[in-house]
Image (cartoon, rainbow, N blue to C red):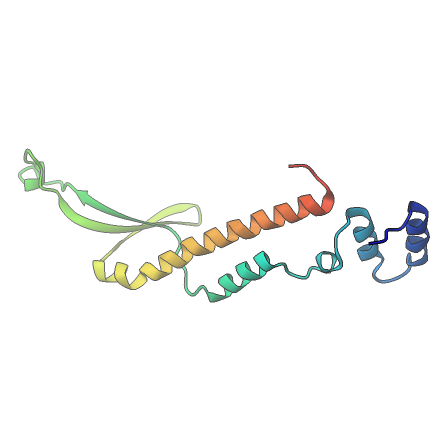
Length: 146
């Protein structure tokens, strides 16, 4: 591989100063990025993340909790020693406009919508992967240390 001297690079950048790709040439010269990186061509990890995002269907945010509970009746079996609690109750909790919202689900509803909850979990994981890849890319392209 042959590289240019600083003088050759300066001459080239002066020559292409009015070129519509000048920013790409300058970015490549200053960072050492390859053409595909400069032009935003996707790498294999970004392609995998994009493919996985495209395959996700409906996604329900929030958490599922199953609880056994006591009621308010003083003479109920849930007050005995040992207590026989009511339930299980399946609760779906999520945040809507800054407020916590909880809905009770039946076992059938949970079974029907569990794939949607799983999709939301996968979506969050993929978003984290994409953010990490983006941070790594900008650190590499700008020559920043972590």
